[in-house]
Structures are given as C-alpha cells and as structure tokens.
Image 1 (tube, rainbow, N blue to C red):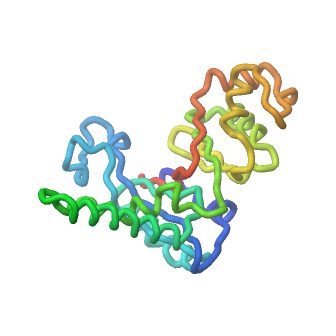
Image 2: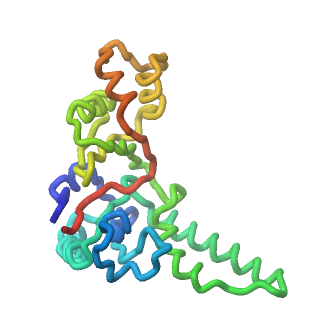
Length: 232
C-alpha cells in the first residue's frame, strides 16, 4: 500500500448499529496515473474519476469483516479507498432515496415526453449515502492539507484544539479530522487575515504560524471523504 490509514479508523468512528453507518468507497482517479502509464480501467478519457465499489458499515464487527475485502479491491485496481467523515443515518438515507424516486416518478407521470433514466437509478444509492441530508449527529470537519510540512500540520491541529480527532496521511499531505463543534472556516480565515472571531483566542498563534497558513494550501471541508488507503 502506498498509503494505509486503516489503524486510525476506529479513532474517528462512533458506531450506532442498525441506525447509522459509514460509507466506504473505492475510486480510481486519473491523476494517480502518470502520462504513459497503462490505464486499463479508465477507458473513458473524459472521466477523471471512476467509481469501483462501495461498502456500508454499521458496526465494528462489520468493519473488521469488510476491511480485508476493501483493501484487496484497493490493491487490485491500484485505486483509493475513502470513508465519509460524517456518520450517516440509515432512515435519512432511505428517505432521501424515496423523495428522489417520487420526484422523478411525478415528473414522468406529469410529462408526456418524459423518460426514466437508468443512469439516475444507478447513481441513486451512492448519491443518497453521500449527501449532507443523510448525515446524523456525528459530523466532522476535515482539513485538506496539501503539503507534507509538519509545521503546517501542527498549526492545524492547534487550531482544532480539544476537538481534534486524528490525522490521516495522503499522497501529498494530510487529512486532519475534527469534531464539528467549532467554526472551522472562521478560525482559518481569522488566522490568515489577522481578524477576530468570537469565542476564539488567536493570541496563542504567533506570526510564523499565521504566515504558514497564508502560504499553504489548506481547505476546510464538511461532509467529506477521508483517505483510508491507496493502492501502489
């Protein structure tokens, strides 16, 4: 494995069996292939990403059972394995899927020239298990840090404070995961622009740390996907 963060999963997962789950998804990304490399799965050159498979995991036992299969697929296709940072509600996911189906059926019934899209059916569950509407109470921030500079990483961890959970390695940097209990975007902008934010004391950050953030590529993401593993 080029990247393997599987040992960190249980540090950010809070299981609620039969009511909630986490989605894992294997994706092939065109940017992982250098020019001239054979791209056996990326037959459509216009697509920058190919969906391989997804797993819905609702318990620690299910994770232990599915993980070997996930890693085998990741290695076989030399792809990336991701997990949703937000825990997903099973009921909310089904409600979202039902509402989308009802919307499409209503349109089909009301319009004489409407057609039912097979592509829509194929995308329904992957979409329903990803959207923010399906998230439950366990929500996370993810800081996408596009550098291996550990000084930048340490500033982000400091910014998260007591809500920091774990750092996942990526190919070119880090994914920092934190509880969604603070204004992540506000804190980041505050430090970059020397601004002020209610309930955030920026006096603990020196000018060097603020300069690091201004000069680094750091993006805050909600309801995102964190990198679990990457095939070599």
